[in-house]
Image 1 (cartoon, one colour):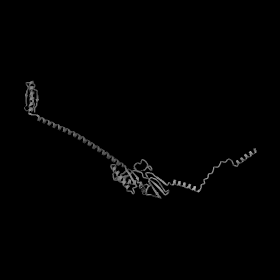
Image 2: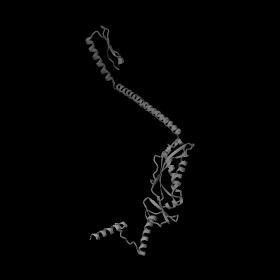
Image 3: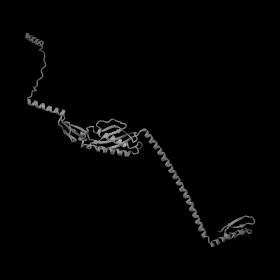
Image 4: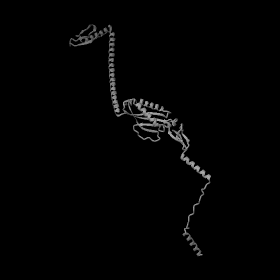
Length: 345
């Protein structure tokens, strides 16, 4: 028994020495073999999916856009409307154009850079010459949009940079022609008329283009930049005008004061005239009211006063003036004093 056991361990030892030690189990084998029909379908489906990913035979156009379909390099006459459209890969291609309102700002100072796709184009202010050859800068805003119905013809005729070939040169040409009709000093005064002429000129020029490539929304004249010496001259003229206006106001105020005093003096004279007329009328009435009977009554009253005076001073001498043209006087012979008793007319 012991010898059998030794033989077993010796045999195991020899096997380990020969490299026949512990070996990991081998992974199971799977059979990927398919018949020819199944393999063909697999490769067809995979190739179709890869073609869809690479060729992308469809396109989605959103609102505010149009698609220009090109077949073998030739543009179609009608633009593609918003929605889903299928294409023939590698043969047809669609170019997206923007039909929303776009803006060109001509500004002396560009405060920000235009962002791609925001529809705003920033350009330097338009520099032109006035009637005498002085440089003037015009800041302008032009709002426009691509004619959606004729977008394909416009791109075919003008290319994708159509606005740089139509809107920009037209605006500059019209501004140059309009400003050249005026002196720089008169530009601020004629601002409204100039703005109307610029707008009318740009609209007429764009409308004359073949197939009506663009629809103008508005043209706004924002600023007129004048040379510094012209600004100084205008400022001096304004100051002189203000001084003249102030002098005219002072003259007008003086005229009003003089008219007021004249009116007051005329009123005083009228019042005196009225008073004198009233007094004359009163005297006339008084004269008409004196009758012989009234005069006799007055004489009786005066006689009564004489009698009273003689009672107090019997030595007084009384002088009566006939006709009543002078006062009646009594004379005190003791003292020599005299006194008017009354007067009659």
